[in-house]
Every structure is written in C-alpha cells, then in structure tokens.
Image (cartoon, rainbow, N blue to C red):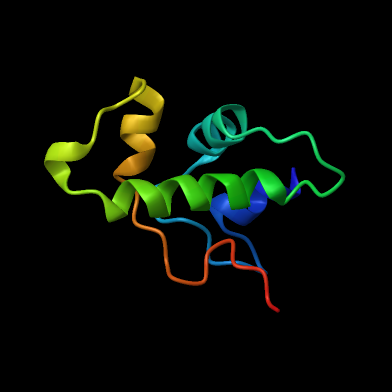
Length: 84
C-alpha cells in the first residue's frame, strides 16, 4: 500500500503524473523484485524507464502493452533516487 501511495501521490510524495491505482499495480507487477527492501521494485522500474528514454524512438521495441504504456509516463528527476 505504501508503494502505491508513493506512485499515485499522497501527503508525503507528489507521485507520478498519470499513475492511478491500476497503473501502480501494473508497475509493481511488471517490476516485482524479491528483496527485503520493497522500494527496490520502484528502483527497478526507474532504471528500466531511464534506459528506455535513453534510446531513440526508432530503437524502442515494446515488450508488451503495459511497458509500452509505462514508457510514455513522465517521471520527475528525483523519482526513485536513493540518497548517498
């Protein structure tokens, strides 16, 4: 529930524009990471998103409809960054 709140926005985060409960569940399903730290799933999503956005549009090959939709989201620069 906390991860969903982080993505849709709450008192503590601005969330991801265009992400509601359904899209948040899709992100968690696509980028599920078995880890002791649940935020690792969001980090995996952000890493994938960064790689996809580094490609030129002609080099993008959609894996599935969900990832194609998620690639079109605009993430703010601080999304899923871990302070050093």
